[in-house]
Amino acid sequence: MKMASNGVRAVRGFWVVFLVLLRLSCSAGQMVPALFVFGDSLVDVGNNDYLPISIARANFPPYGVDFPTKKPTGRFSNGKNAADFIAEKLGLPTSPPYLALISNSSESNSSLPFLTGVSFASAGAGIFDGTDEILHQSIPLTKQVEYYLAVHQNLVQHMGSSGAQKHVAKSLFLIVIGSNEIFTYSRSSDLRKQQTPQQYVDLMASSLKDQLKRLYSNGARKFVFAGLPPIGCCPLQRNQNKTDGCKEDTNSWSRMYNEALLAMVKGLKSELNDMSYSYLDIYNVVQKFIQNPSAYGFTEVKDACCGLVNPIAIIPCLPISQYCSYRRDHVFWDLVHPTEETNRMFIDIAFHGSPQYTYPVDVQQLATVET
Ligand SMILES: *[C@@H]1O[C@H](CO)[C@@H](O)[C@H](O)[C@H]1NC(C)=O
Ligand SMILES: *[C@@H]1O[C@H](CO)[C@@H](O)[C@H](O)[C@H]1NC(C)=O
Image (cartoon, rainbow, N blue to C red; front, side):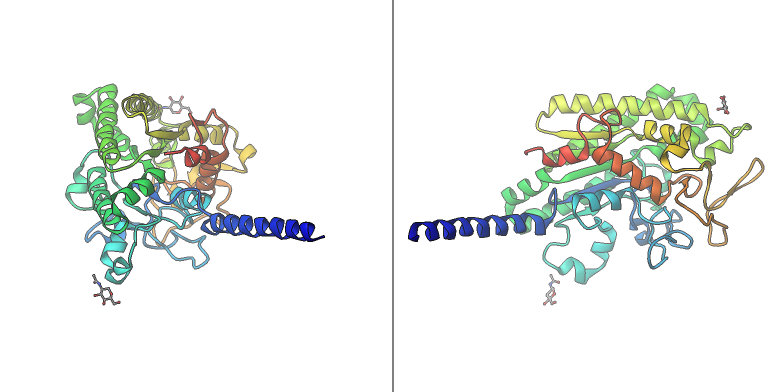
């Protein structure tokens, strides 16, 4: 009897310890300690609202119409964007805009404002320091990386260098950039005379590589790369095709860049073998939506929900714009940005997609890689 009751107690003790441990790991509920976001309007969660003169802002309705408050937040979407969904899946709060954290002194005074990550993404940003950046209308990638270096310093101060190293090495670095270079190339016949598409995309990839190395030197080990979408299929570009089709040259530059990006990342991985990454093939995901919309719940793959496109006029999404009453069946929210629903699907695929669209590992697998 005595032995049995001891046994019961031991078993019960085991379960208590087990449940407490389980609870600790679940109450954290996080797959990784932090998410650091770099990129453009596809993942901007409000940085540009803090730039003094930027016109690249989504701080007016109907942007944000599908948030419970219906308020615009600086996201170029009717609701959440891909940065929100990826954080949600990782069990993290959305990484807040860096400029909000540093402008709000009371928040930055809290002991560790950057602990679960921060977003440097800025609408209009590119890999190259373009004119937008010189006019301070967006934060170019080089500057985003400089901001990260400051955050890294802050983490080292608070956690010590080995604590910060472990924290950052387990964290994910999301990189969503390059569309603005392709838009620029598409707009500028001068640029197209100076550089072949291949030269241009190779320069994009090698410039990105320099920035990735800076991140790596400051602790980054796990990267999530989004390839470019078929940019020639966004409503703004379709408008330049008389038959309403996708703009084929722009699409070919997007594909060319994606190939250059993948080759560069593979090269980087062979140089730095303790880095790991997940690549999301947004190009082919969007093509799939366009070719077979009903399979994914879409009925409108060409027109923007907000604003108006027709063969004569393009009207962007503005406070006075009409917008569709049902957003979930549109791939595009405005002339260039996806709807919340499209963003949700991107991230579902990034976490649980077929290996055809997310490789060499998906984001869920990347999160569990030991560093
Ligand atoms: C942070 O806030 C506390 C009071 O809330 C204040 O005493 C302290 O000086 C502040 N620290 C900094 C670095 O601003
Ligand atoms: C316009 O779209 C059609 C398909 O509808 C395509 O065949 C054609 O190449 C496109 N034109 C340009 C200039 O991209």
